[in-house]
Length: 150
Length: 147
Image (cartoon, rainbow over all chains, first blue to last red; front, side):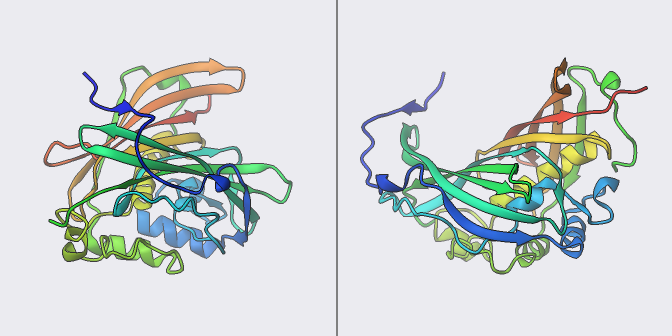
């Protein structure tokens, strides 16, 4: 038996004009040293990443970019949490390769279940290599909800 | 842990792979220190139990991005150096608390030759000692064929 029911009537406000609008966040480059530091911290032992020239794809979830993109300005709840992440990889993430980053708010929706109403913001971020091809994409879903301090 | 190469022909549906890990407070600090410019939520949920309690949590938690990195490592260890990850998709079902001992599990649910290559689908779980599975997900991986 499922308790979560998708609702159309969850009451919340957000800026609809930002949905689907891609914003360039600039570019970044991973150094082999950064890659090796990440591998050491996370206990990555796959020899593929040993020299730091190829990065474990998960490293993209730990880097920051020059900006964060448009804000959907969701007016709901008093706390936000990560709800989910989907990463797709189309080519190896190489150290010293410049990656151009663009992001957009893909969708905003409400859902009401056993624990009340929650509002989800799904953001898609793409990493584009020098060739112009997307080498990786991340979709992150963030949930806004009401919580009480414990 | 991932010195041995896994080949597509050796994979069977239902195969399981398991590792263990404890994301200590120190390890969380190291992870966050990898990129100090990355902003956090600003409520102290990763820094202290007090910060976590201010938003209704029991104790300081592990960032979702770090949980993703932890489960990614499991996939990398499983596939070996010649494997290729195509996607990892996870749901954060409940917060991962710092210093919780975690079992990391991968279960083969599909393996087929596709026009793009031999693909294996894994179910992924992170399980704590309370029997909770705070993270669940799937991965699609390409493995080499044994000659």
